[in-house]
Image 1 (cartoon, rainbow, N blue to C red):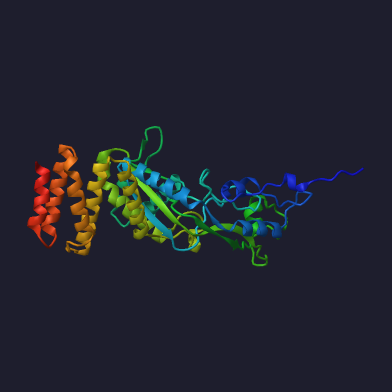
Image 2: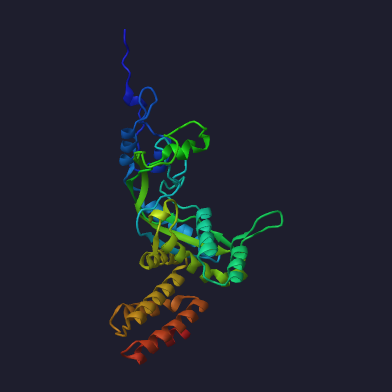
Length: 358
């Protein structure tokens, strides 16, 4: 008697909040019954995974922690957005022939810190227009020297991580001489037309997965505080390398180019500031809130007393009478600056300030 085989019980499905990287790397299920694999199966697998990947809240939270770590180490962080396709980790083993470098816990493509360091070193080595002595000094001090007597470089290069969900896409490469690349070193004296590089070979489409759109957070920090003086130059070189060379694989074909995204960086910095302020005592939170509003009013040149700045001035000055001496003194200094900046009845506002001095 034949027993039913419930295939559904053995199938693994990726949940809504699953790790797409783990799924793509470890759960390939397109083999035939005899363990062969045709091109249609590869294309189907890649197409099925060419989606928007990553959880927005998780990526944002991780980016804020990453940003904070870079800042705490005395470094600087920059956000870059892809100008076109980005491919990383194509040499990693996978049944579809081309892999992808996935972050192990976030489940999104990323660029390892070693890759960031290698990209920047390649730029300095080949494209830096500084005098030879300056370029050589940068290579040795920024990146370190090898050998038994070698030393570590002056800077730490962090992984470049996405700050929001990443859009993936299916792409195709068409190598014409695959046998030459695979077995060219095994050519014997006999004629082997399939192995030699020639123009009679047909292209073989090879599908692979790429990043179509993403924003990455790059971070670089000095190993010691005294090394921070070169940090602006390092970031300037990184921007040039990403803009002209590109990161990851297939850069000769235009892949991997990235451009600075100042608006995304400012938004991330603002979120980090709010997060840091939320951990402070209420008095500090209110002072920082007023300071931030004052800064924005100065940028807008908004001196009207009836706006948000004037409202916060009156609210905080009134509630601060019960604060400690140190907090009141700091607030008085800030309120005095605001009073001089704002239009309207300065004398009336000065009364509120004087009440905090007692």
